[in-house]
Amino acid sequence: MNKWRDTNIEEMNIFLALILLQGIIQKPELEMFWSTRPLLDTPYLHQVMTGQRFSLLLRCLHFVNNTSIPQDLPKAEKSFAKIKPVFDYIIDKFSKVYVPNENIAVDELLMRFKGHLAMKQYIPLKCARFGLKLYELCESGSGYVWKALVHTGPAMALKDSADSLSHLALL
Image (cartoon, rainbow, N blue to C red; front, side, top):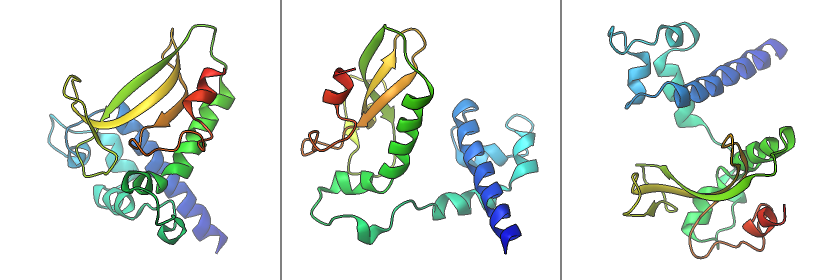
């Protein structure tokens, strides 16, 4: 029983490592990471996980029980609530492991996103016109993101947010 659990944890660690690797090695389509065509081949990925297994894990990945999400939330906040614990955990780790220097900036970022999501923004003047809008507290020299806040729309409750911009500004 314990061996089964260790195997699953190891597989999830590999899965998360592959997601991080995909941020470094970028390809237009997910399937291209497992392509055997010489121009697109990324041989290491075949050794650690099959493309079918990666797709299955990606489809089944779930962080929050849907019944625990309040039904009275706006649609955008409901969709963010599904990943909020993971987002908060990562941002908390970012701010605990590094202390930025005195040159910091609050920045607005539009992270490109093509899928269907209620909190997706349309900003015609940006290079990536559709995406997720984030507010980030960054170190100016390195660009290290120390804190971040996802914009979920006009109804977002900044006062109730543990990482609101008012908290960012007090640093």
